[in-house]
Amino acid sequence: MKLENEKSKLPITSATRQVRQQWFAVGIFPPGQLFGLTGNRPQSAPACSFLRYAQLLTRPASYIITCMKTNLLTAILLLLIVGCEKDVIVPKPEIIGFDFSFSTERSPISVLFKEINQTLYVANYWPSIYDYSSKILVYSNDGTLIKTVADFESFNQGHFDRYELVDFTFDNKQSLYVLVRPLIKQPDQSEAAPTGFTILQFDTNDNFKRELDFSTSVGVRNPSSISYFGNCLYIAFGEGKILKKISIDNQQVVDISIPKKENDTGTWPYLHNTDMEFNTKGRLYFTGQASFNLDTVGCHISIFNPKTNELNIKYAKGWTWLCCAGFNNPGIYISNSGYIYLANFYNMSIEIYNEDIGFITDFDTRKAGFEETRPIDIVCNDKRIYVADELNDRIHVFKQN
Image 1: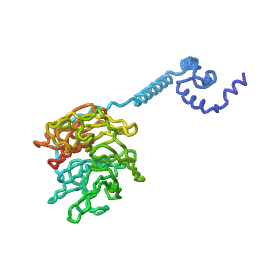
Image 2: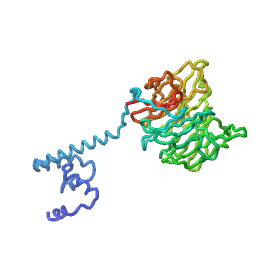
Image 3: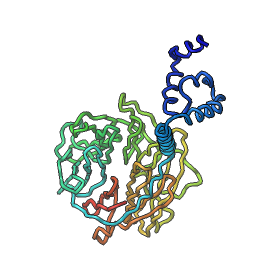
Image 4: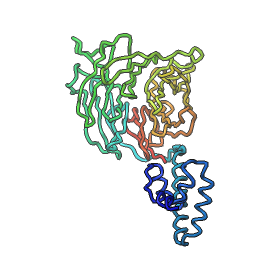
């Protein structure tokens, strides 16, 4: 008997036993000598529970209450952990109404929202001989002009005389990449563009950093949009036949052919592209002209998976009678929640879709106070939607939930 008592006083050396004894001390499992009776294995739990209950009956009422509170708190914490693992249901976006608008340079063509400082970037391009304008401007989220990132009438940090601004995008650090067509002056003082394109990179403070020159690329015409995903830049072209994937690190170019689906001949020209965006899953959504006949024009919203080379062509809700094939310029944006926002150029509306292009809601951009609008691009934050109106040289701001 003496030997048994001495053994019971020996320190527990097993790390597992030490942890369990800490739990046992609060009454969840039997403490002290009862530990040795029940062992470490799960099948000993029934005996463990019985012995714990017997021991608790000999303890003061205050101790039992403390144990019950501890067990209750543990159960609540476990429920919270399990609940957090479930998918969070994100409410569908709802456009509440028009908020305000502000003027910008002539013919805005693209907009971006910079999350780190809550500012709006606006690109415009108006190639008139008499009042040429092509700039990248930064506004506060309430429409106050903050600064000019680049004025391409006087910009002289690149390799070429002048640039035709096409589109821009941010990378994951919110450095700015601007897609441009380089223009070269001819002997008669006119300007001509080579077949390719270049990309102007600005750092996070909007200082010019470098030019990625692809002006000698052959077989490409009319670059139309740029997007960022996975440390690569993707360039689309108006014809909608290929994408160019460009590594930011080494500028290596990979051509990705867009698969042609013979049973989808309704788009004119085939998958005409004016804008594109990646979602967080790596699916590429792009939009552009879609026309079925001579008096009806609309937009396609196509989904392309570069990994599987799968293409799914969908169509936007709004169609109009106006025949302007080749000039329809819808813009697209994907929110952090995965919803697709479409600036429907000739339908003069904002349209919202889920990731499978299921229609959710729309809103007439003419409620900004204009008889006609031409929404060419769109971006949003949590509470506001910013729409570039190419016709009226304004940014319209709409409220959303």
